[in-house]
Length: 105
Image (cartoon, helix red, strand yellow):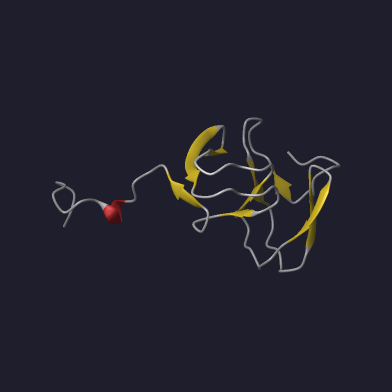
């Protein structure tokens, strides 16, 4: 969880996570701390969005709940918003199933 070096509205769910989750919505320009370093949100973000708690290399796994939820599609800086613009899911969404799949409509 957050500590005195990280804003209290950023929650690290599992000790192995490399991201934290917003526990409240934030507005662009709002300052926050990650491991003692100050950042400012570049955009409004809603509850539940992810923020990198350290630098993440391109191709590195994004760890949430202690398990991989995706891979970084480019380098992600500490304190940066982590979402579809810089990561891809490790899970195949149902709407992208191949036409040949028995589950495709």
